[in-house]
Structures are given as C-alpha cells and as structure tokens.
Image (cartoon, rainbow, N blue to C red):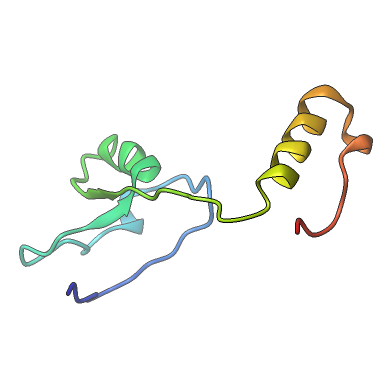
Length: 85
C-alpha cells in the first residue's frame, strides 16, 4: 500500500554525500533504504527506515554450496564459471 514519491538509485558500495539525499524524506515522508546504507546515512545525520530483505532458495542449493566450497578451498581459477542451475 505504499506510494513511492521519489526514487534515487546508487551503485553498491556508494560513498554517500549529503547532496545525494537532499530533499528526500521531506513533508513527513518516510525515507527508505537498505540496512547497509542506513548505517552510512546515519553518519551523515540522515534518518531513514531500513528495508530488511530475506533470501530463501527454492532450488539449486547444492550448486550454490559447491560454488562456496570451491571458493573457500581453491584458487580463483578452480571456481566454475557460468550459470548456476
């Protein structure tokens, strides 16, 4: 039931400046961001609500576990490339 009034997108690991969020959250509107960015924005004195996201795999868990295991126990050249089933 939420209505988005304005949206700004930034690349992952963006180093925020006050100008990046200037004007957002005005008129009593809620400023929503990721939990990771909430920490960065708090350092600038910006108050925002954090969106928590949970990931649940429905299939392909064995393939993901194999990739993680390969990454932890081998050099980068041993990690399979391509699409995970």
